[in-house]
Image: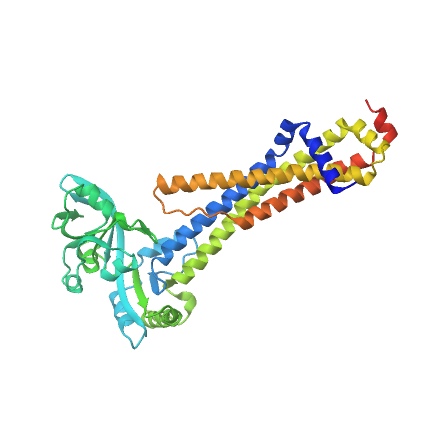
Length: 412
């Protein structure tokens, strides 16, 4: 039998029960659309996180206290006292570390900030002007405090856009005094809207000199982080090694396994994000893929019912000269056409739902989310759906091909 005849016969067989055909491929549609959504949203999330990480600059090096976190409980090390002013001075010495343009320590805590009767819960960060550069913070008004202000432990603050709106509304905040932990700070700068930068939301941040934060707000003599910047991206690996060697010498550590600090670069963070999002996407896709197997079993059952219902048709076709191969091809074509059409519908539905989710995240939640259509996943989905039709349609097709024409014509 010619290919076009096999195709038209299979298509005619499917048209006789359109509602049943649609319900049969529902599992395939759900499975493929779920996989497309997971892949599209996973890629969007990964790109959003990577964009924020890259916003810190490829030359930026982040040094934090404690050993490398291996679980959620390890993040308490953020508040340990292993990084001090002595370490900062050692890192600023070009004899210890070459190629660094900036070294700036910092502290951070969630605190309440108030102005008259208004108050807001924000992240109060003790830092320097370089801290703002790392966070890609630009000022909409005012100026940043200077190194002299840091040395004098000045009571100055640069506040984020949301902090300004929560405390002052439409009024001008420059020159006004806010209170943090009972201490008065003069607002010298207001940041432009920025949003998330790494783990900090710039709009919900108030930055004060780190010396002021240490002495008057926290009562500590250590740092929660040290930001450094290399002269070029190529010098980052060498700088990381020299920073580690310098801190080990400062802390009297001979075995790197006993480091009481850990160093992150943007390249490290990017690789971690890619690995984590890749694993999560694969796991969720595997769960969604279970519905494809369920859908395949459903197709096999329906095809077996179809073979039984069309027994007389099979007998008549064999009596008119159709071979076992012709019958096998016809029912296989029907199964593959069912699953392939389900795959097409699933790809279209998954893309539409992913686009809708992206629009909601962009316009309603105000997240800079990019819609990414996973072409590879769409192609793989179509191929898998067709393969499912081939695998799960083979048994019913063989059952149809094996029927005796005489017994099939006698079937009631």
